Length: 260
Ligand code: NAP
Image 1: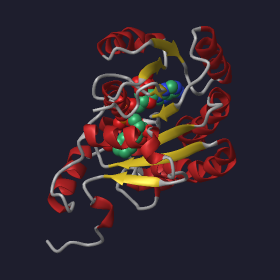
Image 2 (image 1 turned 30 degrees about the vertical axis):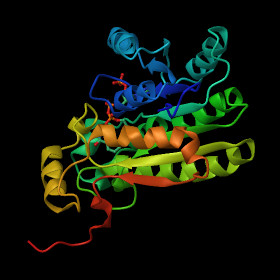
Image 3 (image 1 turned 60 degrees about the vertical axis):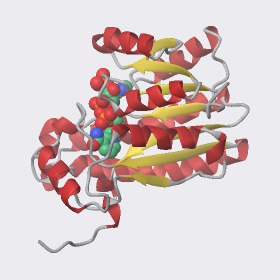
């Protein structure tokens, strides 16, 4: 059977370790025949990401802290220099908020904590899309990861929920701007998965317990399911889909109130 991403090159930002959703996506892209390029935020992560890249195998690993415009520019320059001047897909799987802001009431969010969450978790998609769109001359697919806390109140998700709301709005505006050049922009709204970022959210294991109890599929989300949806979005099967938020959450988002 032919592979869904044969001949395509994908840039994946946000692999921190083997539990990262970005890593599950990179594995699925690799399985489907894509050439996968990874980034890491800082020297602290370089060795881990290089090791994971060798397992894929990823073609190359590049540094990129998305809060630094110069690093985003040098990422695209390095891609060109290393023979990756044409890419087909970009995965933005990046978020950050101060731990304090994920434990105390939202009303106590500081100005700096609010801006930090917005910068890393929402604005970075705009910056990355602007920098990488010129590498997608033949069209392409940009995707990001979001969560239900963007539109509903989820206890302790707080400032990150507001950042995800901005991220989802950015997806729609980017889809409109980049659509004429056949670049699609979408978000996958994943159900809760135990990753390094998720551990920063107070009482996260209670969230996993309640999803398992009430989600229509009566279980939590498997990162491989998120990854397969990313494959769909990156592939030609997703060619008509843009500006969308696709839920991969065992159906939890349809639940309003359950008895007991
Ligand atoms: P993760 O493994 O901790 O991934 C988050 C990534 O963001 C890490 O690789 C982190 O790098 C990176 N990052 C943070 N600040 C950065 C910066 N300034 N520049 C570049 N990279 C930066 O956790 P994850 O759960 O897979 O998160 C991936 C995405 O999925 C996030 O957008 C998250 O909100 C979203 N999501 C997660 C869940 C869940 O339950 N896990 C559910 C829905 C959506 P460092 O580790 O090097 O800082």
